[in-house]
Image (cartoon, rainbow, N blue to C red; front, side, top):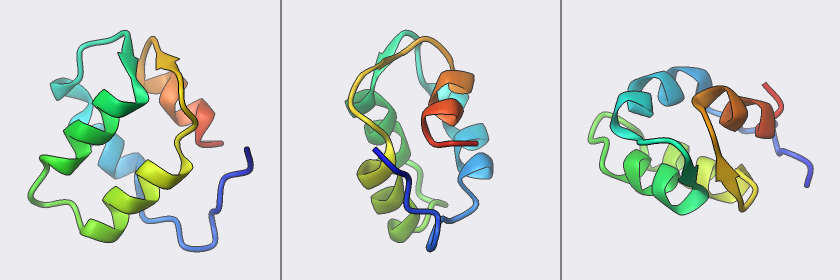
Length: 70
């Protein structure tokens, strides 16, 4: 799956802000859920993450970043 970076928000900052609320290993759904519960995160950033993070299990925030092409 190619990541759509044409409208990518500052996803690295977003991931840093939610990484302490995610217990790894974590499925995409849990990561997206943690992002959804972040009041300071714009809805467009939450949507971008949900639409661009491939389905799967992730062992660390670094794996999430890799999956997003970071």
